[in-house]
Length: 418
Image (tube, rainbow, N blue to C red; front, side, top):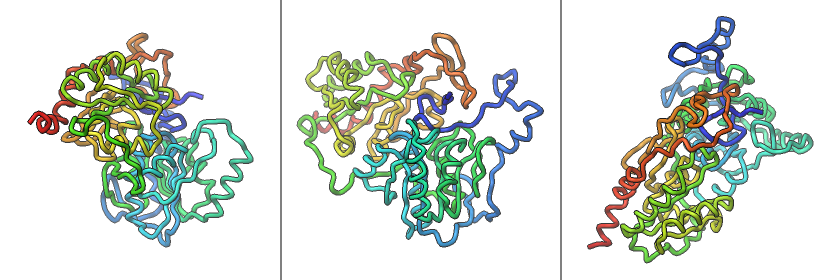
């Protein structure tokens, strides 16, 4: 099953909008005459007869009455959860007495167990096509939906892509009211926001929350370590700036070359910073390679050695985080840690930090596969994905990234030198 590009390397199972056939001379897709009706439908919001009470990201509609139980559907990885946090904070503010249940994934459960958040409970999704990748079990799905219907949700909110699979999934919950995003080929919800691929993901989710009557509280995720979190000793003597680097990304096209991360780590260490590389078990080799190449006792790796509480604690104590467009970078940002991100330009649109005083973004403007030349900006189920995994961000200069790391740690370095 093709998954399209979403933003490069997005979590599998997230649906995107369809790509319209036909292209103009400028390369942009346009609808064929026979599909104009579908095109118009794709661009039409469904308000469910509700009146508008204000403006947030988009229209903020009338709240639903008597909402005591809310379900939010959002699968995917760590970054996908961070994108949904502002919308869930808005929903919690709009319905403060309601119990908010996130229908998510095991990593969501682990993260939310380590931080304070607007989520009251996480229910792990069963494997289901387009929602959570894996081998489906019809009996397990039936039991899941029976259990969810037994909870009698008053409001179910779909934040998981364009709705081709996630809207029918949401409808099976049996909630009194449904809100979400929708492409032209997706099932109807009571209120729906048109799903058009290139939109900042947290802002998209906030637009959906507005259709449920919720005004924005924050534009981006804001989290804090849970009170019971155990903080490990800070690497080094505590006086050195702590630079945390995550060199991985789910999609290899989003990865900055290991040699450039090593050069950056060595430069940071030479300037007096303590550098710690992180990653999951599959990234231990990559992190070890970078640490070895940096050739400094101030550079070490904790890849594969931290549980989620440990990762949260380490990031919360960092002075700056450097990473590709990855879940740990989004988590660091949510914890209030300055970040330097290395992004493919399409991912900047959908996932880049909004501010620049604490967060720096280095964008690669590559729009074609370096090997075969296929256009990597096309999105949707019909967009071809070539077989090549060349990095689309390899052209970002080490000196540019290092300059931002230095500027974000300069205050601490100056105190250390005094």
